[in-house]
Length: 431
Ligand code: GUN
Ligand code: ZN
Image (cartoon, rainbow, N blue to C red; front, side, top):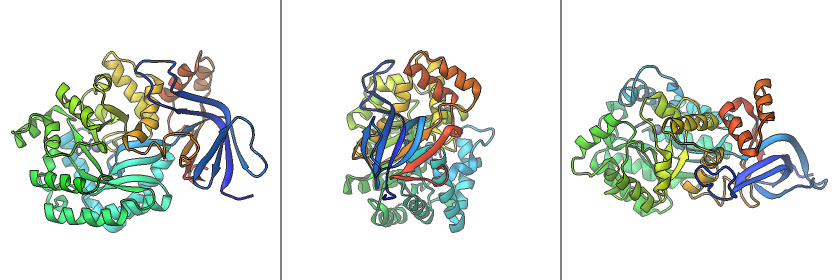
């Protein structure tokens, strides 16, 4: 029996499209209880109700929930070191906690250890693909790509660009940064499951010349991604207004330079206006809503429905270490609560779609990940429904599938994770 030919049994859930806002029984939910997922090599070969033949090694997770591995569309690899740092809002938090932590990644050993810790931590939290910030350092970004490559994981990352308003040891310059980006792109973009994201940290820490350089890189290769932050706090928005007085809005700083496109993912977008949302929609760019970060840093309440109504794609992301957990279930629970404070209701379907198929679509990777579909790469997570008797009892009283999934993600976290499969291989940390 070939070791790379095996079948996973469990309750399979994924999406065939985007569920409408507020819809409890959308046709796009694909629920296949007690099914078998057949894996050959790196890929899903079939999904079926009947048990497979003897040539398939069986891995029986009957009664457990099988989902596509989660996709975190906005997270900072070096910021595991500043999780839960007390007492500051965004701009102080960057200066007091985050920049000193990121400066330590200049040391190759720190960067290598940090990269490995980050990749393994994502997997242990049920996340099999991510779009991540590295630090300003080329060598630390190398180490991050290398760690993801060794794990066979799909990672999109890039060296952070920042040539002003940061401590001197973290400051780059336009020419040096461009050369570093070009070397990293040549080495890693398209290598295995990796891709490069041009990564200006946010408008305040890049000169106009550096943002123009970022746009130049993007124009040269349609496959490159762009990641940054936008309109996270009101103080930040005011600062951007002072630094770029000619821009109509914060978003316009990026837009006017051609930084918005189909592969652009901007974190937050809390303080945008209708015109900004229309521009995001026009360009097909994505907002990475980061609810635990927004609550922890007191940044504001993101109006998801307003963005969705404007046709803007929204994913849910961890934004660790502003966010307080790499686990996307915890972030979805926070997302529900943020919407509740706005008088809106986030369904389990919109929530789970935003970290699976929706995130894959945001990254133009839905032919590859985010679905339990023959031909897709087998990036899969197996979850217990419950471990605690109180939760188990609560779930047993669910009247329908939505109620069950909703209670599951509101009450669950990474401790429910039983197994993670990356490109067809069960990971040791969770197997
Ligand atoms: N804005 C600029 N840099 C950062 C960061 O590291 N985290 C968050 N949440 N916002 C930012
Ligand atoms: Zn961030």
